[in-house]
Image (cartoon, rainbow, N blue to C red; front, side):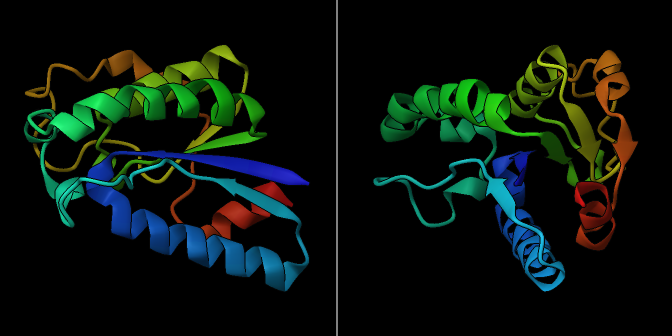
Length: 154
């Protein structure tokens, strides 16, 4: 069985879900036994569109502050460690602070790291100072679709 862990900013929750469903469908069509490990963006006590807020705004929510660390640690130290491959879903090239932590963890564990896109396309870089330019070097290959990714997981 192959396994892939997805790492992404919460702001791309819906797009990531669509990507993972498509990948799962492709794996089933091709007879590939694939485990998809995904970030936990859901929690009781968070507003419905909570994922659309900036991290700064999310941190104002008491329930979020209380649970986010355990979710991040679970993702870093259980899911990334267990996966064969790490896929960074960086829509528009965006890498947020938690995703950068995921990326460095995957690299330190010697995982193959793929990403959706290469560079930030929103014009925010280098204004977003939390993004380290060197983290781009930890991505082995840009793979822009589930159809392409499944080929690397066969």
